[in-house]
Length: 85
Image 1: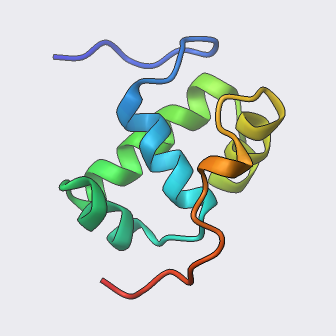
Image 2: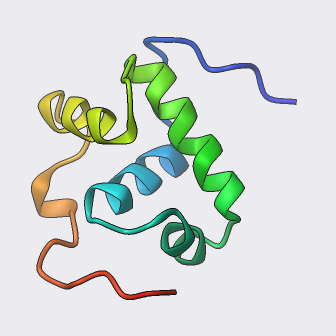
């Protein structure tokens, strides 16, 4: 069993991947498909991201992550429209 997330803990690779896709405009369903997980798994990852970054929403988490350079604009898929899964 994993320990609960706490503010200030570093983000895992899976959390960063989900956050990058969310920042690129993908829905939870699309993120789940891309990462080979469930929508519930995506929601859990992004909830943990919010706790660790002390963010109020996934949008706020994206803004914080960009500001702290945890994710970068050049890592996002902004040139291509997100397709339905």
